[in-house]
Length: 173
Image 1 (tube, rainbow, N blue to C red):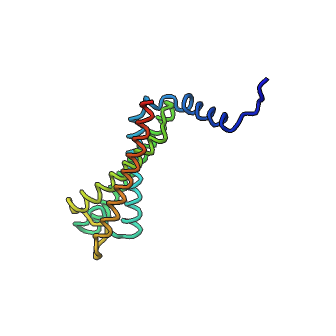
Image 2: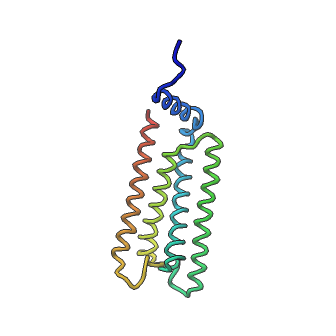
């Protein structure tokens, strides 16, 4: 008769087997939705962080700085509403993924990193430089701020792509 005590490896294998077959058995069917849910969440959270830290706490800029302070505050409010709805919308999509047993953590995290980095890169290049809606900060040498802002965005995107490629490899197996 076999001993009822399982080794660490046997327990770990059982947990991994159960997680892959029961809890998230439909994750491969919902791979794209996991990615898009993460993208939306990453975009919303980074927009929220940007708005709270740089707009409200540090007072470095408004979303739109080419008019009066009142217009700047209104633009910040609209920007805040956008980030809030993106984050809440992604939470509903995430709940739906769990309900369908389709949640895939690594794929969702890849979307968060890509969404966060894409938003930050869009903000740093399109809004700051091409549209000239605002700068990160005024009355300082802006180059170090721009470099840190855009390099951080690229790092977030690369982390997300790395995670995404890992999930694509597991689809092939």
